[in-house]
Image 1 (cartoon, rainbow, N blue to C red):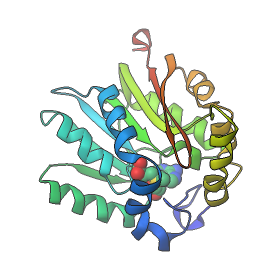
Image 2 (image 1 turned 180 degrees about the vertical axis):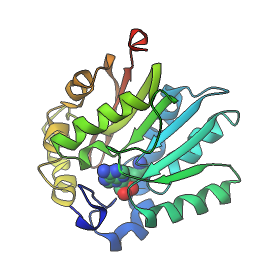
Image 3 (image 1 turned 90 degrees about the horizontal axis):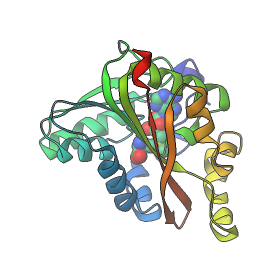
Image 4 (image 1 turned 90 degrees about the vertical axis):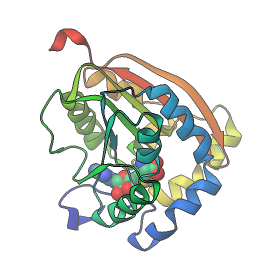
Length: 223
Ligand SMILES: C[S@@+](CC[C@H](N)C(=O)[O-])C[C@H]1O[C@@H](n2cnc3c(N)ncnc32)[C@H](O)[C@@H]1O
């Protein structure tokens, strides 16, 4: 919890001082390339779409999303101004045009019904129950009817080995916010926020636990 941000906020690796090592740590410990490639494929961003990478961090996924479809508009949002400096540098290095917004996930600075896709990775396990629910309601608000949410985050482990491995993440990121991840409860929050066709679509097993991919759709009749 960081009071400076005026609400519930967690740094990418708990402490601001660890942000500089975030990329190499995630690359080496979480099979990042594997699960982010699957997430990009699942999101299926297409020409003319407006897509949001929610809690984009250093922008790895934001760049991948844009590279998956150069005719789509992709923006990133994160609660840390500091991490967005890295994200902007990464986008410039990749030669892709991306916009980044500094804001909290449950108070997004966007008009309603604006996005075709919202995509997010390794984020929801940082939020307490109240902010998980508020964030998913915000995502529902900013998506167009028929728009889709695609998430990759720590999920229910398939066995005791991967459950035990996840203890390392819990020690770093805290037990309160990760409890729902362990129990596989993120889909319940999505349904409570008004999403339909909510599904866990696949799992990627990593040395630090099981990453679940989820899909959820904002129903068309709510236009
Ligand atoms: C573990 S990092 C994941 C970053 C990136 N999505 C990835 O997959 O590498 C979590 C990110 O969530 C951001 N964050 C935490 N709480 C937030 C909030 N309430 N609103 C927006 N961003 C938040 C942090 O600044 C951090 O960049």
